[in-house]
Image (cartoon, rainbow, N blue to C red; front, side, top):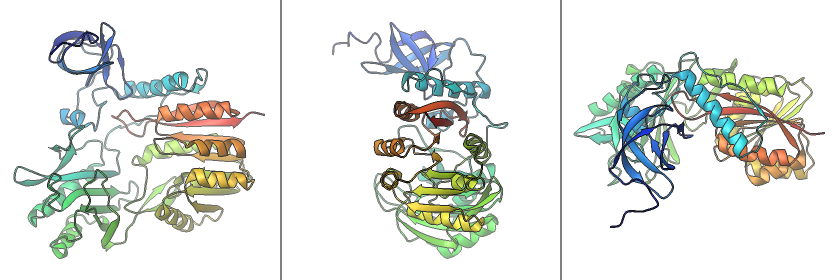
Length: 459
C-alpha cells in the first residue's frame, strides 16, 4: 500500500513536537510540516514525544508518549479515566488558565465568524471551588465481569469504565449512586446488555437540590417490570432519607437517548424542589434545570444587569423551560411572556409561577421560531427579548421574526460560541449593535462555556 504523499506522517510513527495552540475542545495542537496533529492532555508550550494513531487528509491525532517539558499551567489530574471518558478534558489545566481559554474561545469566533473584532468581551466569571458542582448525574449501568457496575463510557464508545467518584458531581450524588447500585446488586437486578438488548437497568439518574437537599432517583429500565420493586423502594428510602421522589423511566428501544416516553412514579411525585435567586422551583425528572446552581445565579444576575428593567417593560423570554429566567425577570418587568416547546415544562413553569406568587407572566407552548413569527405578524412588540437556545442556536425564521418585531434590546444566553457568533452576525446585519459579552463558566474542567450577550437596536 502506497503512503499518502500529501500527509507528512504515518500511523504508528513517533515524533517530537511542540504544542502551539488548543482546539475548542481543549486538545493540544502541534504541526509537522504544516500538518496539524491533535493531542489529548497537552498544553501550549509543552514539548513531547508522540505516537501517530490516526491520520486524515487535513489533520491527524497523536498520543503523548513522553512529556519532555511541562507548562506552568499544568496541574496534577484527578484521574486519567476522566480524560479518556471525556468527562473532564481540561482537568490537567490550572483553573485560571481554563477561564482564560474559555474567554479566548468566545473571542476567536466573534472575530472569525461574526466579524465583530471590536466587541467588548469580559473575563470569564469562574468558581471559587471548581469541583463537586453538578446537581444531576446520569450514570450508565452495565455488567463488568460478573457484577452490575456504574461508571461512564470511554469516549467515542460504549465501553463502560467503572467509576465511583466523579469529582465534578455533588459528593452526595456520588454516594447515592453507589447506594442505589449496591441495592440493585442485592436483588440481582439485571444490568442492560446493549448488544443483545437484554437485561433491564440501563441508567441510574440522581438529581439533588443544592439549597433544599431534596433528592430524586430515576431508574431507567428496558421494561416496565422491576423486580422486586416492593423491596427495592423501601431499601432506597432507608439508605437515602433525603429522597422525595423515585421514578422509573421505561426505555425499551435500542437508542443512545437516555430517557424513554413512559414513566412510573414509585415514590412521592415526579418532582423535587430547589431554589434559585430566592425563588422555589419544582423540577420533574424530564425538566431541564441548569446543573451548576451557584454559577447559574451568577449567569442570571448578568442577564438582570443587562436587562436594566424599570418595571414598565414588556419582555419575551424565548426557550423559557420551567420558567427560571422568566420569573427572575418578572420581578422588575411589567409583563413577561415565556415561550417553550416542551409542554410538560410549560406546565412546570405555570406551577412555578403560582408557587412563587408571580402573576405578571404568561407561558405559551410552541416552537419559539413559530410563536415568534406568529406574534410578529400580529404586530406584537417587546422592549426586551431574552433567548437561551439549545446548542444549535437560533433558527433562521426566529431571527427573521426578531428583525420584524424589532425589540429595543436583546439578551442572548448561549452555550455554544460558534452558533452564537453565527447568529450575532445576522442580527448585526439586521440592525442590532452587539454591545458586550460576558462569558460564565458553568462547567469547570470541561471545554464548555456559557455567555451572555447584550444587543441594542440601532436608531
